[in-house]
Length: 243
Image (cartoon, rainbow, N blue to C red; front, side):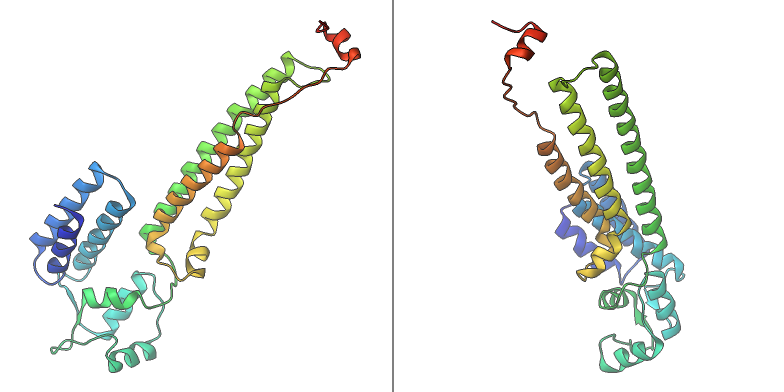
């Protein structure tokens, strides 16, 4: 089942039965495991949220009142005042069903037009866990690089730094630079996304794309350098390199 077919299944499940929604989640999970691309992860998160929302509201795809709608939007991390909600319902921006209820799928679509109050708790915890793992990995890498530099420095102490020591120093500085940039972006990812009017649920995709771009830049920064060394007569005598 391709992504388009799965999206169509999600649309049908939003207004029909539990089995269809559960089937959609299992299919999305299978595709994500086979190919954990940002697109497949996004589809799995979408169907998971729909299933969780259905469970939270007694298995119904409708919200019974404006109070339920406000609570639902708050859980989704969206900010809206009661007066604005009433005005949007009156203007038709959010459609009320003939029986006075609200379609969950339409409320989710309406939520996209609202400002972000906070990342949903589940997504926020995932971002924190991701940042913690990356920070720990960076610390370990820094410790390894530092130990290697210290060892070589103790073996060869002198006025002129060997080429490999200089390259390690540059690589170490690249790690420190990368760590600082990564941490700054991860700590401010929500502000950055909000600044460009983006969707906070796509913060994971943003971080993955940023990681790839940063790794490419740092690899170029820490690539092997070419040096041209000119020995003076004094240095040649001292090092025994005179021809």
